[in-house]
Length: 396
Image 1 (spheres, rainbow, N blue to C red):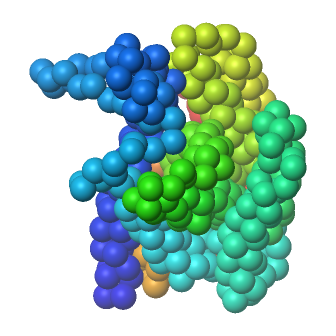
Image 2 (cartoon, helix red, strand yellow):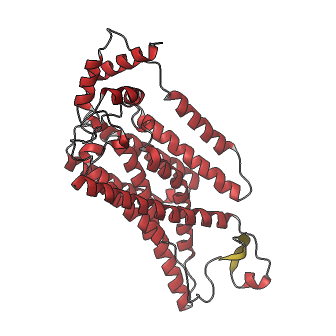
Image 3 (cartoon, helix red, strand yellow):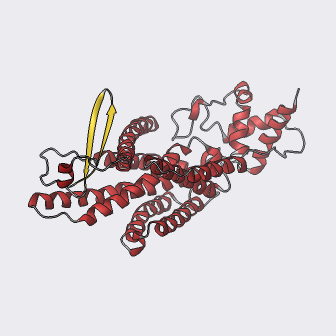
């Protein structure tokens, strides 16, 4: 019953996380688009009132006229819409999911003894330290002179992000490392909103209400952090979907794959941000395409070199019974799984034969199963599955 309730909490939290994430990212993308499409105000009166740019648009059968002030309007309107709860709700629901799946279920999803021998307490403590430390290091760098040099800061930030990816993959399971990489970036994004962007906007509003000139540095800082957030977005979205693609996180060089795909995502976003301004070079998009194609080619499955004596089906059945059926059964015995993951059931010979390709793919090619090697499958047992599958494939 406990595992069943956890599954429901997982489902509901994931649903909320997806909805709020769409709202946050959609608003973020819209305002980046809006900033990059602003034109010089046509009305001299608007210019005199401090309007720095405007854009006309049409949507849903209506016309919209948006204006952006250089600093703030002379009179703050009574109703002012804020964009913050989308970010906060996304992070809160995401952290709830992280705790529920990867921390509460650390022995299943976070720890892989073949990567590092960690206790659940040590693994969770390290994970929390990475999340908090990522924000602290990033924020401190933004406040230095380095933060004023956009290109140099981007290069340093990429180097640190690469080290983060490598370090996480040396400590946690591939799946756990990938999701924590995304959580570190996502935490930086929401902390930018909570600690920098919103407080700066509040100070600007308070100054305008007092009749004082708002500090333009608040606007500059907010713009800097917003730009960083938009470049983090696609790497974070990749990580959110990566648990469906064991070919990436289970690979021997999973850290390099994570770095390459994250860089490709950032480059794709760079291209589209520039395209909004009407001066996009295709070079970032081309580099991103080359990176993705290169990763796909390098991690493509290779022909198996399985050799040795023929394998009796009884041997394969024994491996499956001891290493797979704990979870993949009509009545799983592992407490973390109320139902067979993915609906894959291996109770009978016919079911094992029907799932032969998937068994081989998951245990031999990607080696992602058993998850976190919970059942301690050996190399000899993987070889048994490999030789059995290859022999079956070679039959007419």
